[in-house]
Length: 214
Length: 150
Image (spheres, each protein chain N blue to C red):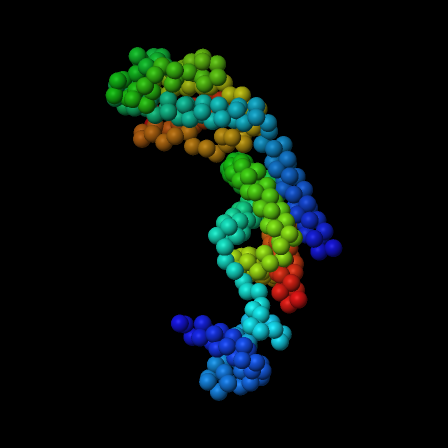
């Protein structure tokens, strides 16, 4: 039995024996368990007099969720990168910077690839978003999916880094006096795309947390 | 309210994606344009291959062939064109035009479908091929490759 299993077993037995939560906490403190370990173990059971102790809902992992959210995450990433590359090339064509025909040919090539990618990745993202939102709407317990939580926070982490890098780049080039409309539009494109994704998933994460604290 | 705003974000993203794709389609042209671009690229690559074969022939026999036919080209140089059709325009089936300009220079041309502006986009700045001892250059206006012995 792992230490965490032993701790959970002890807390369950103690609550079954009608020991108060503060008594259990004191006993665990004396045994050397950390505050986080103690509170996690005690909070794993609902505050009720019902015996046996009633476990609180816990995050879970399922193969289906891993498939759905994994694919959703990839579809989102591919769509975002493709859309941004496409917008960059449209800006390059609109505001050329002396690259001549070579730049135009390169832009056409990138546009072909990004359009081909977006035509499949973006509808896939929309469809999977719809399916997962519907599943969560039907059963709020789906919000506890561990893979959903991990990928939501990973998305927030990545987009936050991109937004920060975007701002740093903007300030650096402003300070260097090296800003053109073409550059500003590209910075705006990166900021809007990653900022929108960040805001969208932040809403999801907040809703999940509210649901957990209910 | 939360769900509504989430749906609005997705709807707005869809509008942007569809708009960007539609704009790209306008820039790239329709399927007819894509087909024409592909054939023009094939013609250009054919001219480059012909340049290779002609420089090879000239290096082997010390003169350019009188006509652009497989039978007129040195056997050791023709491997790149296993069929006579390889020397024909991919759309019309007509042979590429060929002219011996001087003992040291030849000109061979294709009829391109692209407009003058499109020709610039497709071929400006592209190499006409590198053949040892020869200089080759593509003329955007005439659609001709000029091959000259150094």
